[in-house]
Each structure stands twice: as structure tokens, then as C-alpha cells.
Image (cartoon, rainbow, N blue to C red):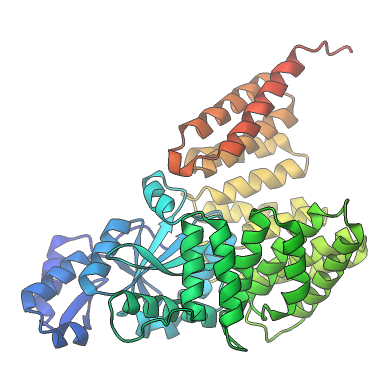
Length: 494
């Protein structure tokens, strides 16, 4: 995860940087970079200095300078430089987000792109980012946007984990759209697959899923064979179908096109929605659901067995987790357990090799889940304790540890870690930590503490700003509290 501290915090350092940089340079993360485009436009030294001031505060992480939780400043910088704004909508609990930040967005090969975009990482759980989340809604983490800073129009969008090649394609599409909006070279032809994809992305942001489905379908029809964005467009399309409740259409799409989703994480993401649709029809259409699961299991097996697939350790683990789900639904528990053992080994090795404690935190959740699945939760306790010690300000390690210990039947030990997580957590994630705390109190048999915890949970949901509200989760929390009140009035001898 990126640090949330600014790289330029002293006015003296900033003034010195401005003095050293010539008129044809801009300051990015405290360093001078050529800006020949600005010089070619004949901008004065004062104009270039004004741009540099607007762009103060970005911090270089890996190859790229990032603004952190500073959307307005990042947008101002992008406007001043006349370049697109790239948004990484992420959250600390999201292992895919952490993996992308540690192993894709930090790739040294992205360095030449530093001057062509402005990059901003937005923690979607922070309440002060609520207005940004409202403008660029997220239902899957991470989600990446490329927007024109002048009017905040979406030029490109990518959902989930991307390979390095896919992320470059996203940026290229976003830049082309931005240039098109500014009436420069690189414009998008009407009816082109990229233009249609952009229409679909904008429809999703506007919450018009019917229009999004039409645009994504048209983009796929217009695209030439081998179009590199086909896999992630298929992910967007099946996600829209599933959200609209078109389960039959979801299954049709999955069975017809799952082999077009490539060899990166998009293949797994596509099948996540396909398997949800299969689960929905498991009772009413058992044969069709089984057919989908069998096809999905074969597809995922081929993916995880491909050593050349452009998958991070986290991506490969996700594919294995979904393969386990498909195999279990098919009654192949022994095969599912064998996959879990392979997954555990990959995750343990990746965590041991992680370059930083934050990079290692990427694997806390999938490791906890697979160790519980294998019936060996206590074997991971020391590793999660070490993660919590190495990251004393992060809420996720103690949260995962509390969950693990609860699953291991150790609610008394889990309680301490849940309290530590609650002391650090913020935003919508605080509700998840509070719910875990309530479950721990229930496991301890302390009805008074459980009732207070569930009352606090309802209050947390009610206090969320409208942009981050979770009405369905609030309703579930209220229902659990009401059920607890009913139980307390039942004679325990009956």
C-alpha cells in the first residue's frame, strides 16, 4: 500500500525545487522533469511555476508519482498539465488492491508514463473521500478510472486485477479519449470498440445498467479478432447481467464466451460472476448449473496450471479459490482440498518473499481463509501476529487474526484482536469489524455485550455519509438486533 504522507512537506524544499527547475521543467514528487509539450506551447516560466505549485505533494512510489487521498489537488494538477487523471479506487482490506499496488503499479517499465498522466490513489473507506466515491462509484475493488480533469468525464475504466499489459491498454484508451475530448490527434471514431466501451463505462458510473449492457455488447461486436480489451469488457458485461438479475443471460454469456477471457486475472473475474449465476440456478436448473461449473472448473484448472500466465501470486490464489468453489459444488471435495493445499503453499511462499510488511499484508486474508478451509487455523496465528506487530497502525492484521481465532473456536483470544482492530478501523469497514466483534461476544455467551455490540453496529451504519451508506447491511444489522431481543424474552428452559 502507498504511504499517505506527502513527499514535499517543507516550504523551503519546495522553493528550492522551483528555483533549480528551469522554465521548461515541472516538479513532480520533488524532482525536476522535462515538459517539452509545455515549452512547445510557449508557456512562460511563471505559467510553468504555477503548474509546479499545483502539482506539489505527489509522492513517487515505484516508477510513478501518486497523490494520496487528495482528489481535488490531483485534479488541479492534471488540469494545469493538460493530461488525464488516473484514479486507483482501493481499500486497505482489499488484497487485490494491495497486490496491484505492490506488483503492477510499481513496475519500473511504467516510468515513461509519469509525465503523461496524473495518478491519484483514493482510499474508498475514508469518509473525506465520500464525494469522490459518489462521482466514481465502485462495486468491485480495485476499480481504476481514467478521467479528463476539466469536466471529470470518464474516458476508461478497469475493474479488478490487471496484468501490466492490461493496465497499459487502459491508460492508452484513457489517453485517446482525453485527446478526443480536447479535439486533438488520437480521437475516437464513433462506433469504434473503444468509443462503445467508453459509453458503457460512463453508463455504469451513471448507474444506467441497461445502457451499459447494450454498449458493452456493441463494443464486443465491433471489436476485431484479438482485441486486447475483450477479456475485461466481458467481465464488465457479465457483471452487469448478474447485477440486473439476468441470470439466464449470464449463464448464456458464460457458456458461450468463457474461453475468450484470456490468461490473466480477468478470466477468473469473469467466472466469479458465472459461478454466482450457477448458484442462483442450482435448484431450478441443476443440469445447466452443473454444466457451467464443470466448464468453469476445467477453465480454471488450465489457468492455474499455466506457469506462463501473467498472474501474480494473489491472482493465482484467487483462481484456485474459485476452482475450489466449483469443485466443491460438483461434489469433488478431495480435488478441492488438493487445490487448497497448492494454494496455501503459493501464498506462504509469496508472503515469505514479500519485499515489505505491507506487501506481505496482501496475503493475510487469502491465507487465513485457506488455512481455515483446511482445518488448520492455529498454524497461521504466529504469522498474523507478526504482521500486526510489523504494521501497528493498520487495522487489517488484527481483524484477520480475530476472525481466524473465532473460526478456531478461541473467542476469548479473538476478543483482544477485535478490540485492536476496532481502535484503528474507519469508514464502512468499521461496520465489518464491529459485526465481527458482536459475533465474538455471541461465541463467548455474553448476551449483554453482544446486544451492546449490535446496537453499536446499527449506529455505525446509520452514521455513514449518504455516499457510503449500505442500506441492505443496515437492514440486516437491525434484523439481527431485533432477533436478539426476541431471544432474550424466551424462557431458556423451553
